[in-house]
Image (cartoon, rainbow, N blue to C red):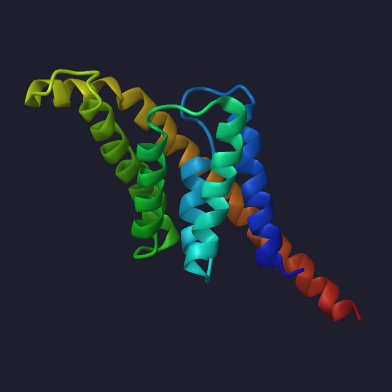
Length: 162
């Protein structure tokens, strides 16, 4: 099994596990896994499927909700955006794309007045969640990068041992 396949299995497992264990709001590896899969994965559809399938599996345990399509669409947009930037910029841009799109869908869902003031209020109320998402994305991208390097070195060591 290649180090890339092992890495994607670890990504999916971490994504699933860290969504179902108690955590601070929006402090999960979801966006980090999306960004990392987009930047590290060579196959577009398979890389995106890893993230979305892990999300769906954890959502089956956590419970499906009315905003699930908006969340998945926002993650897909993060994935596509991250394909155009390097890992550093994608780590910063990814949570911002998710913040803008997911909170726009919250505003559209009627939780806030359908006015410019309502839209602004929606985004202001979501700022603490954005801070957690950005912090978590930076943290988990670093963790995933370390895992990737470790797996590559371990595979290379095994290959040269024989």
